[in-house]
Image (cartoon, rainbow, N blue to C red; front, side):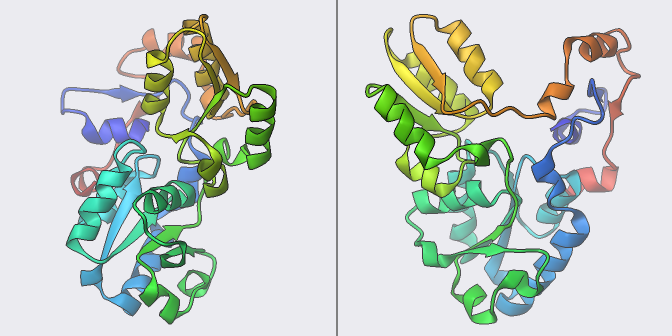
Length: 268
């Protein structure tokens, strides 16, 4: 995300990150070499004029640049449906990186049948698929995931409903499809915050996302019962703390400056 800020930064703006080791495991599941190889394999089957690359914001800058060079786009969990609609209006297939589950949930929400959604395993030739399967697919999904959100299960939703029958279940679209299909609502972080904020006092929520957001919402809305489906935290987020934030603020413009090569930035 710091790279994304650096891509969008103006020439007179500097981007810093309090801990340079605070990366993203999901982003690391798709590097430029792997994606370029997979892209070439896919277009060798269906043709470049039929496939649009889309990449989630939680990705390496080089992957964003790859999508830019190939007439694709970057999306967030909030605007993924609009990005999918845009892509399918231009060409008949999408190659989505790097989150399999956000891609599947977005496609399913648009009514795309599961048999037209294909997972691409970068460790295998043609992603582990046949040419016929690739030809028949509308959406190709890179085999990547968010560790935080794949910890949630349908059984946790069942338990929450048994213990709190009035609870409304909200999960993030990075959760697996079987979890999303059993929830009452699915949406981005801003969607979850809005749903809780707009709910009347006395409301109960069971939420499937990173535990810090859930605890913050519970603190900000003491008139509502806000519960996690389970405690699921992101170790990389935990690497940002008050101490290294203060050290960064005391060394503005110098400590852990994030830069992106101008060629990469232009394409991204």
